[in-house]
Amino acid sequence: MRKYRRLLLVVLFLGLLLAAFQLSGLREHLSLEYLHDILLAHKGWGLVLFALLFALGNLIQVPGWIFLAAAVLALGRVWGGLATYLAATFSCCCTFVVIRVLGGSALRELDNRLARRIIAHLDEHPVAVVTLLRVLFQTVPALNYALSLSGVRFRHYLIGTLLGLPLPIAVYCLFFDYLGRALHLT
Picture (cartoon, rainbow, N blue to C red):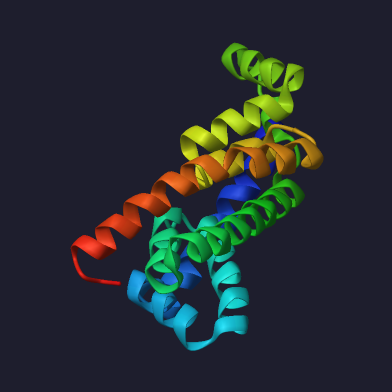
């Protein structure tokens, strides 16, 4: 049971955060329209608030594409993509720090052959593995939690995140820009 204490602490924290967010009514405000309006109404501080909301949303399982779509529709594909790249990187780093503080490298303590094999690959090529995972899964919260709990160094996590996010963000920017034009939203 001692092995699972830190994992349970992470689950408890995330459950309490989600409950507080849900009960406060803030989750209803975290919509495409709300994020779009924030970015348009407050150019400078709107980006800061956007990044903070992205970080909070990432912790409570809000999909990152909502933030990307809002930024592209409000700021265009280039500036929206850049704003999302910065906010997504900030969000991933915040999640890493919070989960690492609570859970440490709890996944390394598990007595599971598959987990040990995955962590061994991560240890061999940490930047390459994080980069590939970012290209495939972008800012998926479960990925952030797993990488945080894996014991990967923050430096490798950050470099892999910085290298892995641009391609999927660029593809999604083109998609949401096209969609916005086709539906006359921009």
